[in-house]
Length: 174
Image (cartoon, rainbow, N blue to C red; front, side, top):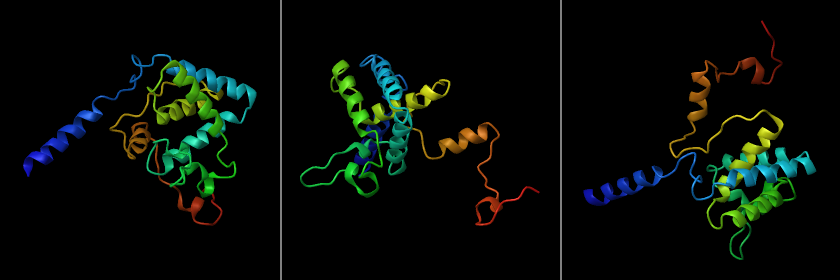
């Protein structure tokens, strides 16, 4: 009974150790440039493209993490998230752009870069195109929902809300 539990712990622990911010530096060193170039061109052609990709990334991450499940198409037996309720009808403009970027990444590095990472890199670049760039490595496996809170607290920022600003009445400075 103890051996199977130990084996599971060893396998789970070893899988996370293989990921790093420079994960694609040897297997697909051009991925950053390919995604950045595609996003730059897209934003030049349509200024809404950056916001659309950021919105896609938010909606993907909002439910069960950043796994690119929002990009799943329908199959004959299972509806994909693209056509699910709030995502259908063009409310998540940007699917075609991610498909285009994926095609370009696949041409450079076949079967190497995950769709989740392509979406994350595209969202990062969409922000950097309208704001001065800042280093933003891909999330590590140890990143949890507590990470943003700890990041704010490390800069002496607070997450507390003033009750008057959200309780349904006008907030007043006192």
